[in-house]
Length: 403
Image 1 (tube, one colour):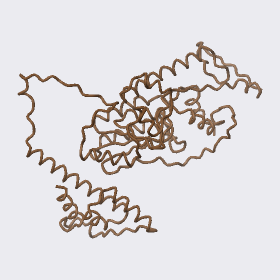
Image 2: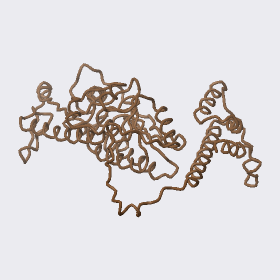
Image 3: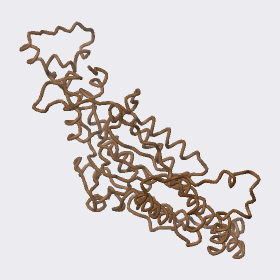
Image 4: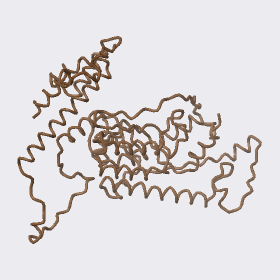
């Protein structure tokens, strides 16, 4: 199966991708894109991988960003391990627009990919942070173009074995003119415009063509480093000084390219905790420090009055009750999905958290060869009274305790 359309997106095109991954891609596709033979045997190209869905953990939307990144995948996502910026943007837009979503976590495991479209998506991610908190997790890779997306978020987590960086641009040109000659071929290009045949694989790269390709690589490198510097609160010089190195675990935090070492689960738990009890942190290196404004005594009367302590107390009580209800709903959903809704009341009565319930259900499922549904159709009847519902009763008791 020849894939000339993929060749045009890999050869002679500036890419924001880790060089090691580019070598793997060339080994996988090999002769299918007309790349010269190498010592690496082409790997089988087997379609059938299913695109992961966007899981939602309670009020946190998790958007997977996995595999090589491209502007448009053209229906090849499942077959080639590609993820398009268009798809990520659509999922991001849905999460921002969904009133049930309070926060967004980007689950990133990607070596990077195409330059086209990545910076526009990074700006969309930055804009989304003004509506809802958006965090990113390098789980385990967030290199090159993938890091451009991670850097645009509010917080960047990296696992202990995960890495970030590779802030650079690379372009490859294949000169197979000698191989053509050995195979008995001689290609003659007839063209108008002195640079029309600059990057042909059937001729050596001319000095002008090399200079033009280098200029485009440098231009994209400038955009890349400026984007990371602006989003992370670093200087462009500091970003360039990384020289496209890879940083792992705590080294990524020390370099200012990440904020915390933690897993995807750690990020979700931390975000939920901050959503329940907002904290005003000390501005970090990549956050802008608000400027102090001068208050004119003559206009002080126009400023809003401080909130009444009683009103604040009532608001806090209402927020606590709502949080307890949301927690109860999430626990009920978990039990329903696990096929054991009858356990909901017991979990709520014990005051267990979502994470504790999830672990208990996983342990329960591990012990049971098969989970059967025990849902009583009569209990789902519209005529049933909520007053007699054990789930509602347990949720009310827990809400009362929270208050």
